[in-house]
Image (cartoon, rainbow over the protein chains, first blue to last red):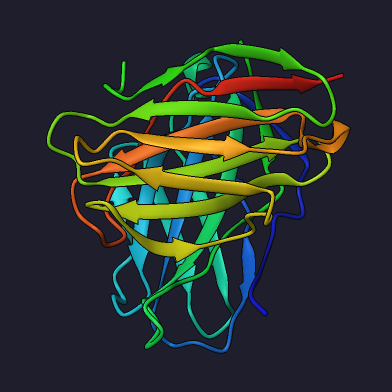
Length: 118
Length: 113
């Protein structure tokens, strides 16, 4: 069964500095998708970044980038030039491709709470 | 504002009861997803509907059911409620049926007493 592990329950970063959040996953599938979601205190879930497993190039969205290591099953999120508004809970998620049965698995990690210090 | 609406915002009910949560997707989105976020279970994917048909099922209990109507709004029905069903229930929508960006609603906070 697929699993997603976020080993850092909480992280802190100084404003304007860089922080990396870790995520590892376990799967026997070769085709899948990985996501990072942000959940600020408002509780609204927001997609931060998305990576297709078949793409070797790491995804980037402005100050957010990932380090995708397929062989190591690692998918870390790097936040550059951290801002106060980045303070939130961050969830890593795995989604399998559609199976022949017409369904897929979608699994979330337990989250990492990021604090940004002024 | 994501454009996804969920009603009600809060719901308090007793064990054994049945409730219905409603979700209206963004205009033009064909997919609706339901998620449960609780302290015990974390964030869990429940079910995905695409254009009225069930597309994928996650950790949805047999006591729970969902449907998507012709106007594309969706309802999540929770029955025989237990204390452990207390959670924040999110709905999300996306344009297609694949793993594209999902837009989340503000959630419905369910408290079972």
